[in-house]
Image (cartoon, rainbow, N blue to C red; front, side):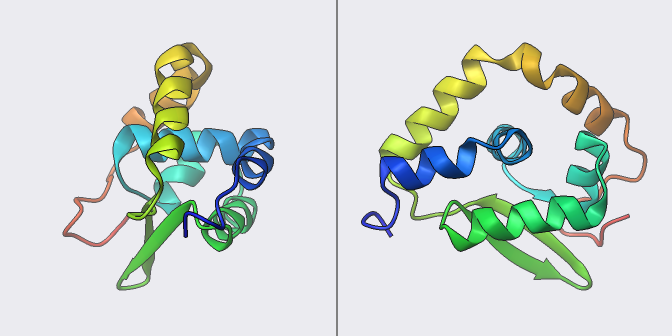
Amino acid sequence: MANLLTPTAVFKALADETRARLMLLIAREGELCVCELTCALGESQPKISRHLAQLRTCGLLADRRQGQWVHYRLHPELPDWVHSVLNCALDANQGWLTADVTRLDAMGGRPERAATCC
């Protein structure tokens, strides 16, 4: 995995605003399901799923299925430098995510990690 995640690949994946917001929210929360990400970003499910698939394909995210729901987390084998980049970006840009975090926090029926979603 470390060989696949070159700086060019990581920064190219994060160059899209939607993918950057998804990555930072997941880094902040630890794990989020598609329905939570759709609510937080205020975007359609197909758009969010397409961006998540791109992030998973390049090795930044891992997913797990729970019934019909798919939950995303940072890939467990991410190199330390990628974690550092994400943590630095998250720490320095809390305001950029304020609206997303507000929508996520206001979402009714958020799933417990061991329960089914929505």
